[in-house]
Amino acid sequence: MEICAVIKRHHKNSVDILVKNGEVVVCAPYGLDEESIVKIVKGNADYCRKKIDIQQNSSNNCKSTCVFGNVSLAAEMFSCKKVLLAGVVFEVVPGDVAKTALSASKLIVNEKCFDDTIRRKKAVVSFLKEIANQCLRKEISQFGTNIALCPAAINLTKLKSAGWIRCKDMANRVVTMDYRVIQLPFELRNYLIAHVFSHFFQPGHDVEFFRVLSNYLPNFDALQTRLDAYSFLKEIE
Ligand SMILES: [Zn+2]
Image 1 (cartoon, rainbow, N blue to C red):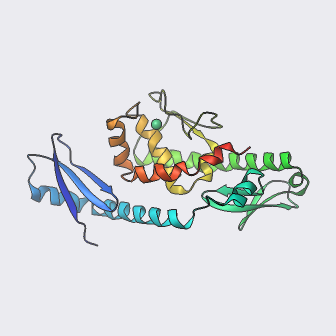
Image 2: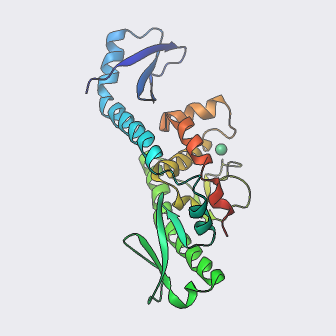
Image 3: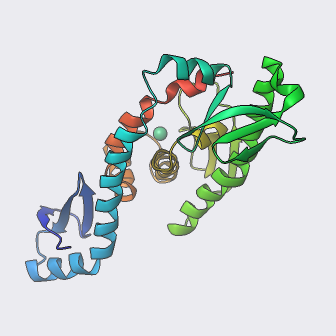
């Protein structure tokens, strides 16, 4: 696949490559000749292709995994008869199991717990916490490893305030994230992780912060819009 890039000039010394809505934009210093810029883009061709693919898949997934506006599904999620996990809906069913477990498209809860709404909800919540501790923690650490910046600590908790992550006082590099993030599709989990790591460099939500974030995720606007549709998950329980 050939890559078409738009060259823009800026006053910085760095060459920044952004991929947004499937388009590559290269911001280069005024003094740098076009031949050198083309060489740099060619050197980053794999990265650009990967980004374009992710963006195209992300917009396709958005259409296919839309669970919103479905009132009965939402009601079943509020009563924990269904649960969203990594963007996929699982039916919660009773079974002869000591511990809550996943099996194909079902989440099996101990049959004695299942009939009691409070105990069923408790079983689902503790399962989500366990999976978050296993998988979400790993994803956060992996993101840190990829950019060679490890967090000092990772707290997966129930955030009472609006939002999925803690954005304040990030200079200490402690990641605080709602454990229910594990219910979101991969692209949205990745967006929230990139958002937290961007705060290690920039405390507020100013232009410079979004520049840092766009280096990790050029399509962050679209992801933020998608994320808004999942805020109902934080009202369950
Ligand atoms: Zn933030």
